[in-house]
Image 1 (cartoon, rainbow, N blue to C red):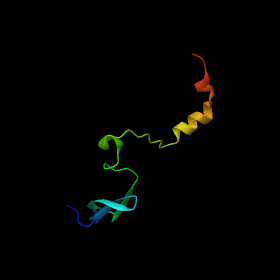
Image 2: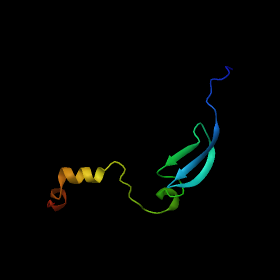
Image 3: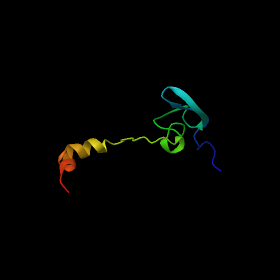
Image 4: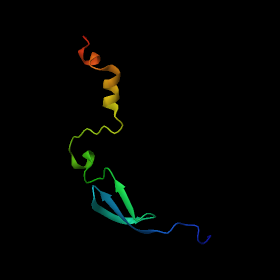
Length: 72
């Protein structure tokens, strides 16, 4: 194997909202995350709507109330 081609692995802290939630090893000493398994709706059993890309706003801007008020 070639020597000195792999990055150095260091202890890493996974940080969620300013709190350390997990410690592992990585090439970076800190990783900041928006969602982790302790708060993810799938793992906690909570139903939560997360609009990650502004899809609801984009839809309302495009169609407005006309979509909701349309007679069927």
